Image (cartoon, rainbow, N blue to C red; front, side):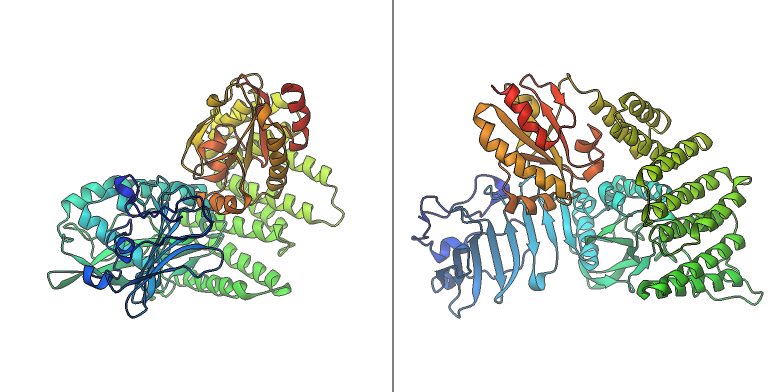
Length: 634
């Protein structure tokens, strides 16, 4: 029976409806006044709010959607005001929907069905924002979806409120930065920029006096977004960005611009990378160039043939040719792509020859990345030879840049060999490992040597050569302590040496519950590292479900560790998979703390822990588990 509408205990959880268990039919409906008393968890939502007198003429009806239970509230004209639904038929409301003029404009969502909202969505005419509240306390931790326009509005509101957290959740996160596919140098530079923005916002908000409590965001200022193509500055993916974005703000009847700067598109959201500008005395009103597009291709040429901004007329022509090639390549197919790859490489070689210093280095890296990628996709058969020639040109004059090109040359040859119809994969792999080892010997300090050593370590580990694997992992930790491979390598050593030692694993489950493997003393514990994109992981889950059913009463427990980049990917999967054990998650995927603590490099990885909490097997196959359980759970 639907017995009552009540407020959830907790200041941040105002307005959660609970459906009482015990009946498949919602017999006792709430009054319209009680239903209308519920409020959205987020502030400043513009939705229809009938007066107490108007509520008397409102009606409450059973929800008519197929496969759900709940109530809908209508006004006297028949317009929908509220909808409260139980979408998984567990007799608890998990969707609270609010309307304006008959259109749904906001909803609170309980995606893990524990009675607390963990998502907040703006819909219809109110925008596209989709906030995630992993702590279920009513405060958004991050934006899963937010438009560029809404980002600028949020920046203005953060300045008004002097709210550091409101600003922080607009910034590109470390995990998202990793996903962009930038070169290590660019990633490090951008990471420092973002960290400085986060650290400096509080001081900026307190010092500035242009944005006041009564200031209102009016609209978004910016031209069309642009694409930073894969290969530029060593990037491996296309990147969509807005440059020179501004917000127009009205204060006391006067309008002004606030410089927002560059926005980067990640998934369904746009992200900030810098502090807002022109709020303090001495700051420029609007930057002349953005972070990624630092030189306009349409820069006018002066009378002596040099482009304004320092680019020669020759360089300008080459940049235009490169832009044309990139545009053509974006829509080309088949043999035409190969011709365009050659043309693009020709232009890049000319740009390398026409430039000096850091600019030449950037073009060289872009050339190496683009040609290597084209060879590995089979679109540039002659590219491997060109990379080899380029490397030999650099070998004597620029050791660091030569190392960068050499690693891409080796990667191109490896990828090309794997594509051959008659490829002997064992021999291809053997040569690849020999090439990597030679690369490390020739360029021990190169940034790419950390990646080369990681692949060598992984190969030795798969071959059962644990001592050799540990030696490579240890060298990464010692020689490249600040690179991302170091944390992974330290964890890999810990995993290899874990048998017979206490397993340490702590985290938070999908439902928000703290989980510590130490609390499972007296049980055999299977720890399963998985991700939604991993097909074999899902096959393992079917075996684990059967083992859980068969051995749970005899002392078997299972803990899943999800390594998707975003928690929502896990939650969406668990809705249908319904795994009967806790699944931990932290942002960062294979680079997260949960993955790095045990150096997880491949999925699935399954660790078996005995009743005393000691590791029995650091990488047991799911099909082998039952044999071990039979022996140990007698």
